[in-house]
Image 1 (cartoon, protein in one colour):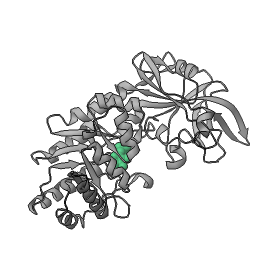
Image 2: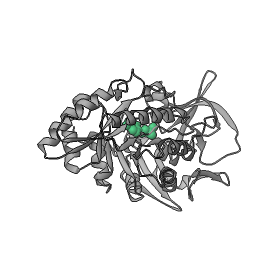
Image 3: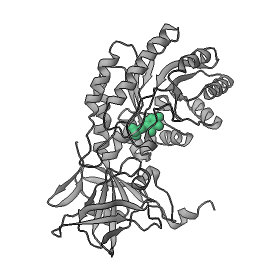
Image 4: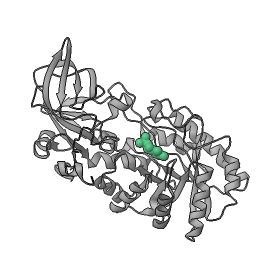
Length: 413
Ligand SMILES: *Cc1c(COP(=O)(O)O)cnc(C)c1O
């Protein structure tokens, strides 16, 4: 399923469901995800690694809706988590804790205990102090924790600075120049087993070359560690492959990327792990919204819609591009406008100076490629209840998270 969203007779569909039907019945703003597209991306990873011992651990932070997690768990995915809350979500969705890798630079004592008790696959460790803490907590519980050290390979991922993580100046991982001595010291600690080497160099990479370069550096490191008597059996290459947000973007190919990796790791005797998030869910999702008003300030046109930075913060946070498409194509041509929300911030825009369909109040639009880091980063800013989420499967759809109410907004206060 290359693209689950397409026009049929000038009406936008997700799989076999007309999006206006969802918007009218579920209300707007509303996130819509295609189950078929999510599964086909997952399978592209799984098939690309066929014949090699591997696990594709979906990065939960990209989209942690329980129905999305359940879909992936049933397809055989593992999970990459970055908090205790994400582990809780995976377990609620029926995910197998033994398929979970725990990443992140600031795991708390309580989170480590929780993960040890649940029996996760391993910890991707980001500092020597964290390894020492896991060693002592695992020893106290009478367990042996499997450890990989997240290496910072000093590779420039050439992406937005906020989502680039693989350079020395970033807070992530342990510098590749120092990591061998860290392995040596960690090898003496009780309660842990040093099984893996891992990395994650950034997100939204539109070229695979930096990922392949990082893999090459990590493989060389595995060779040096093995020569020094540390029996590394697992290699985790993280996530990060990007998706085309605008028609001008390159279109990274999962199969081609994995083919490069296959050539590199052939015969290395390593269990391979990947942690893709965005590349599995981004293109499977859209944010539906209704046009509230049109207005002009001087020469500038504004299309004011009922979705905002509270529901989709990527344009404000990363200067991200999302295509804005009408749910019904009209004969009214196009207009150059800013597409903005109701939130009281000048940064509250979904598109700036963009040529979009000349939509009128009451019309509905979709912000495309919103399945990753969309709802997951939504907030209640301006006391806006978070939108509902819908999952489409073929010709059927269902609400997989209800729209928040005003009562939800004040719960706990
Ligand atoms: C965010 C993250 C991922 C997923 O990144 P994508 O760009 O969404 O594929 C994987 N691993 C780690 C450690 C992360 O922090």
